[in-house]
Amino acid sequence: MDNRIVVLVTGCAKGGIGYEYCKAFAEHGCIVFATDLPQRAHQLFDQTPPRVQTLELDVTSDESVEKAVETIISKHGRIDILVNNAGIGSSGPLAELPLQVVRKAWEVNTLGPLRMVQQVVPHMASRRSGVIVNVGSIVGNVPTPWAGSYCASKAAVHAMSHALRLELRPFGINVVMVMPGAIRSNFGSATVENVRSQEWKLYKKFKESIEERANASQSGKSTDAGVFARDVVKQVLRKRPPRQIVMGHLSGLLSLLSWLPLWVRDLYFSYRFNLNKKI
Image (cartoon, helix red, strand yellow):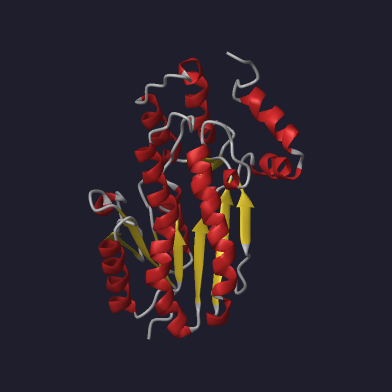
């Protein structure tokens, strides 16, 4: 019987954090299923690392999620670790951001992880063992201007994770919430492209500031995705994984802001994102 840990990672597009999670788990000898949307699932790696297999999975589709989970269970009989990493950006002023953009972010970022949990948990519960890693964001705790939709979708992931951590305890399933700070990956680039395609009305004068926020995680000081992923994986593989992992550029500053009075936070963000003057 193969005793290697079986890991399922969602959202593994090339150049992203999920891509790095897969490589890091494989380096620890795990059997890894790297999943992504059907149109790119089989082009994730130029050369697929040993112990990594690619699989089609769309977290917004019940049928796709069920098929992927059953494929892994039929091959290995279990899923030891689920990493809910799939996510998309959603930047722009909430008063103008099209609701279809907001709805898509919630479908991927919030309902996607829950859809995965509902498919995987019965298998983990039957074995009284498993780890679920939900990837939130530091801005789920400290929402910023120009990214209210994304921040809210991640705040919901945090709330669900806290509830799941207790609800799944009787079945021997651990829940780890990861809250990245600014991590350098292809995630920010995709978000900027989406923002640039929008035409703002009320906030036309803030276009540059909005685009800057969309690209905030990609500065030169941002934490390298590979470094971040290796550290997270190391902690997740512990016999007793932590309940929460907070790391990455700016995570310390934003954590501090979460404890300070709201007027301090408002003052900081209003100057940071050019909202300190009336039009």
